[in-house]
Amino acid sequence: MKLELRRLVRGARLGILSGLGGGGQHSLELPGCLLYTRCCSVPHLTQDTLRTLGALPAGALLPLASVAEHQEVLESFQEGAAKFAGLHNTALFCSLHDPATLCPSGYNTNKTVSIWSSGGRIELTVQRYMALQAAVRPNWYQSLADGDTQQAGTSLKRIRKSVDRTLAFLDECLLLHHKAQLAEAHIFGVIEGGDVLEERLRSSRETAKRPVSGFVLDGFHSRAMERELQHQLIVAVTSELPQDKPRLLQGVGRPDEVLACVELGVDLFEGFFPFLVTERGCALNFDFNVNCDPESKEQEENGVAEKLMKDSEEPADLQQVTCFEMNLKDEKYRDDFRPLVEGCECYCCKNHKRAYLHHLLVTKELLAGVLLMLHNLAHYGGFFSALRRALESGHFEALKGKVLGLSRSV
Ligand SMILES: [Zn+2]
Image 1 (cartoon, rainbow, N blue to C red):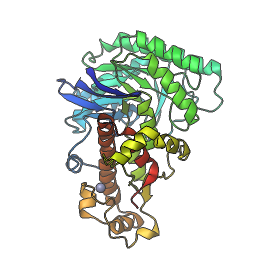
Image 2 (cartoon, rainbow, N blue to C red; image 1 turned 90 degrees about the horizontal axis):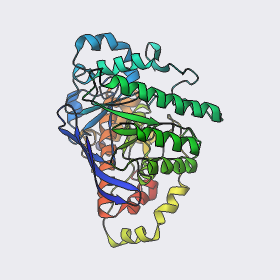
Image 3 (cartoon, helix red, strand yellow; image 1 turned 180 degrees about the horizontal axis):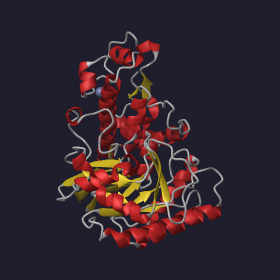
Image 4 (cartoon, rainbow, N blue to C red; image 1 turned 60 degrees about the horizontal axis):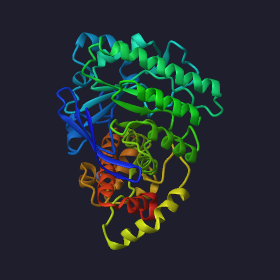
């Protein structure tokens, strides 16, 4: 795996991560997002429907919780979770928790970390965790981590413990990494430290000393802390990390937060946001088309977008409808015969109207989820492409202004 940075725009890193996957044949453009899956399937979609999207991320995310109870099946299958689920042409990243579900706290110990699968709680020792990773056979994966510091008012003692445990887990994982048929996979170290600057710095420095291929930034989702503190801590963390290794930020997916975190030096996101939007019957419709005209250049210089960023609303919880989407269950779409987003090239927008989606949702047809997921993935992917183009062409401020809601198409 090799990270080539083509350009630095303020704090944002534009580049390409190459040599991913078994034969090293995949590459991922940065900043980018992974394709969110559960058990290696994109929710609602078969491989055929997924492929109608054309440009898909070359990396997929598999939360371990969705496969953990099938360890024995995967072990007897022997060829890994991606092949088991028929997920082709993608480099699989296996993470610990599912970013689209909240994880109960208070269950981790010095020896174990708990995850929740459909069958209930599974306690993972490092041994069990590495055996699971060996069964899943991901191309890259995170080390076991104790990220249970997200409750407000977590004590300094508890935060220190999470850093110490996570480093101890990493060292144990590294010892087993080469023995566990994972020699070809890449392991990412996890940065913890809650909302305490010193602990974040300690976690970053210590993790960076280990032979890891990249870094996972844990515990920064928008429910965990105030936005300003979040930004301050992410800057502190990324400035401690080596430039030539990728940084994946967990639990963050809202477009405004993505833009802010890219400027703080984050490369990769988990891609679960379009799924959350789909599950609440909504469609992404925020505008990210930047005209490269003189006016937007001017905006660049005046820093107009900076102000807008501060004024936009506070982070929502997982279920709440955000300002980046439209709620198609709303009665006002009952006889709206426009596509979800004018000019969108996805299957849904080319073939169906808002009124039809409204009908499918009201009558609780499963097709609603399929069509919404297709559009939301296409829209979110388009946003990341626009983000990279804007960094390339120097229109990042203009893009920020657009995304933060100067003009939304409703
Ligand atoms: Zn569409």
